[in-house]
Image 1 (tube, rainbow, N blue to C red):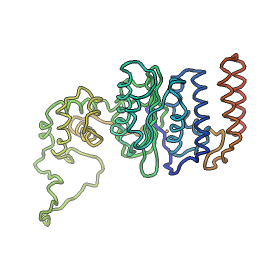
Image 2 (cartoon, helix red, strand yellow):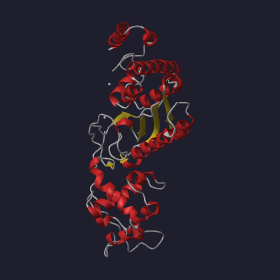
Image 3 (cartoon, rainbow, N blue to C red):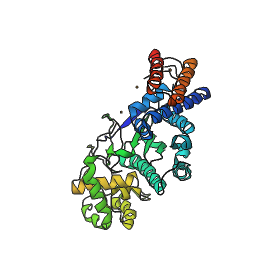
Image 4 (cartoon, rainbow, N blue to C red):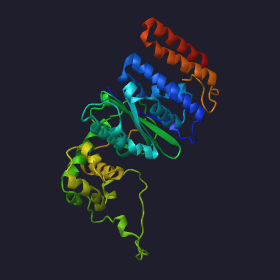
Length: 373
């Protein structure tokens, strides 16, 4: 069964030197080709969707062993290395503004996919970003989104968000996604100690998702009766340029939210969704104007009014061959790196020889890696 998972990494600045990135591109492309040659295109997607394999892959390529840059640089190298015409696999998207070009890149890609598949891929790209930014509210803002697509239409997504000091990477695999809004990420996970997380995609958040859809299908004004209290004054009654000498605002010492903490103004966020009448939660999160705050408001109302609980468990998550750019555990050995590239290329060119010869070459490559350990 697919499990909800992420990888947490220190947020580092800087970039890979050109000499290293060029080698990452060549070796990363060669390893990807070898995986496809030995196991098929979908096997490459499965490996990229595994945070442990991905992290080890980045380490083998010689990038910093634990920083956020391993995500953006590794995917950038693969994007340059993989030829959709030759390998039948392509990488789209990237960091910052490039991530927003993903739909256009999918539509314009020379990858030979079935008719009608491109738009479903665009939808999958958008929904994966929406889920990890609006449904998984863990204080990380997405800034990197890449999608790896095979000719069969199978795909995986590797995207990353950041907060003040850390980056968090999210992995998706199409064959593990039965519902985009129910634990769709495919990765090994571990519980972290992060506080304040609201995970509306958790399986245990099913009741609050159902209630949220019911709320926006009904007239939001009907909720006013649940949120009106004779003795309760809303924050809008304080300040605003008026004389506030006779007013005082005292916040409770408790941390949990209660019904009296919501005013009727919370209903305003539901009006846009009500006009569209979404059929399910997936349609709800895809509506323009519905974002993290709207979904959080719906979740709070669902909890406070209808006792539909949402999950607050954090869905959270290595291997050296050539060293790392920061010198950990040792500086990158360029000569050994180049020999590894040559060895992988030799294996690829040996596709016409028998399996025993190819396996022997793979064993020699493993010896190179073990020697660096």
